[in-house]
Length: 290
Image 1 (cartoon, one colour):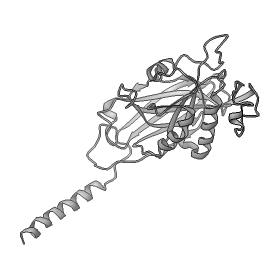
Image 2 (image 1 turned 120 degrees about the vertical axis):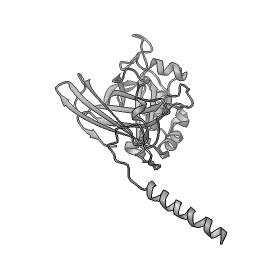
Image 3 (image 1 turned 90 degrees about the vertical axis):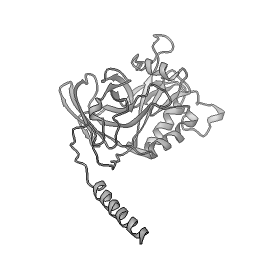
Image 4 (image 1 turned 45 degrees about the vertical axis):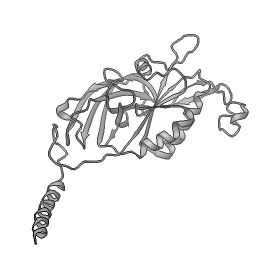
C-alpha cells in the first residue's frame, strides 16, 4: 500500500503538467519569453551563400548543383550568389560587391567556388549537395514573415520574426538583403569539352557560356551589414515576436526580378557555432508567411 500511495500523487502531478503543457501560446505575445514548456516548429529553410564569379571557370559546378537542389527542395532552399570581381581587368565581375568581403574574411574564403551553408559549414562543389539535404531536414523554432508593398521605386518592407523556443540567452541578429534574378552575363566554363565532364549539361555549353542566366545575385545589404542587426533580448524569449519596418530602394530592379532575403542568425562569434536559425525570401511586391 505504501507504493500505491506514492504512485497516485505522481499520476496527479503528471496530469497537471500535461494540462499545462498543452495550452496554446498566443501568437501575438510581445516578447520576453513565457512559462509554457512547449515549442513551436516553423518550416525550415536551408540557406547557402555561393561565393562565385563570372570569370571563374569552375563556378558553374556549384551553380548547377544549387539549381538542381532548388528544383528538388523548392522554397526550402534559398541561395544568394556573392559575386567577386573588383578589378576592371581581371578578375572582373559586373555584379561584384564589397559588402560581403568582411564575411569572406571571417570564414577564410579565398577560393572559388565556395559555399557557406547556414553560416556554419564551408563546402566545396562536391560536398554541397549532401550539406543542403542535411540542412533542409533540420528543425527550426524561428519563423519569419515578409510583407512588401511597392510605391514607385520604394519598397515598404515589414519583417516579423517569431520565436517558438527560448533564444533570450543567444546573440540573435536579423540580416536583410536585396537580391536579383535573371541577370545576363557571359560565364567562364572550364567544363566545356573537358573529358572529365562529358556527362555534364555544361560540357557542350561553350567557354564562355554566352548570356548565362545568373539568379539570386546579391545586390546590397538592407541591414547595417551582412553580419546583421541585433534583435533585442526582450523579444527573443519563448513566444517572443520582433517586428522591423524599413523602406528599400528598388531603383533599377525590374518588376518580378527582385527579392528580399531575411536571415535570423545566432552569432556566437565563432565560425563553427554561429548559425542561421532560419531564412526566408519574398518576391518584391508580394508577401511570404511564416
